Image (cartoon, rainbow, N blue to C red; front, side):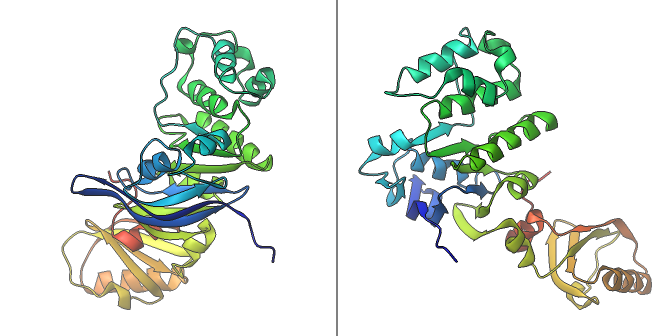
Amino acid sequence: METQQEIIKVQKLVKRYGDFTAVDGSEFSVHNGEVFGLLGPNGAGKTTTLEMLVGLRKPDEGTAIVGGFDITKELDKVKEVIGVQLQSTTLFELLTVDEILHLYGSFYREHISIPELIDDMLLTEKKNSRIKGLSGGQKQRLAIALALVHDPQIIFLDEPTTGLDPQARRTLWDIILRLKERGKTVVLTTHYMDEAHVLCDRIAIMDQGKLIALDTPSELVRNLQSDSAVEFKFNDEVDIALSEIDGVKQVGSQKDVHVLYTDDLQKTLTSLIAIASEKQLKLVDLQTRTATLEDVFIHMTGRRLREG
């Protein structure tokens, strides 16, 4: 099997704010041409990690090589090979789409065709519209266009679909997958499991500043050793050894919700219902589903990716 070339190598990155450690010794590599996801809840350290890689924050410890250049010693060269879309991008609201792209293009020695870029980002009908009149999805596509104007090797996207409606999210997913088809390397942060599963070749799961898992989406789920999840509550507090229910491989719980991971759904449901009946307990909000990245996070942390 051909060894994949590393285009980013992160070594023991640490970022502290006073007594708080936002990123705690992260180590990972990104392969050339892949979509790599940093997945985790808000406050996990995803954005801080991305901001260190693009030069917006200086690491307190550790370093990283991005596109062959050291972020602590060769930041100017790093900036030539990367494009960045931040979570909140402030744009010149009174300029048109065409004007701002030509303005950004003028900042570089060379830039790609602006009309082609506008077309790629599905903004042709809006090219003469002022930025203040664009929808949320259109503004996000414009922010990505600005990150691509100098044809970078590596594109960093920070929570690119947060706050967008489902159709606008899907449109952005298609754009990101097209970037991959063109050989670009994409690093994105997200707290949406479906987004990570659809887009990412590999995912680094972060929680409380630490990188707690790294693999392909399918391998992360497969490591649960379970095809299905059974989620439910009891109507009363109970003391039952849930791991002893037939077919159960692992047990997860958050608040009063129990999750059983199984590769024999029928056996587990039959056993669960029999035990509930024997103990005169009522099962509440019982549902079954295929195991997901959400379950990986629950299993590793005891919490959901997105509480509430």
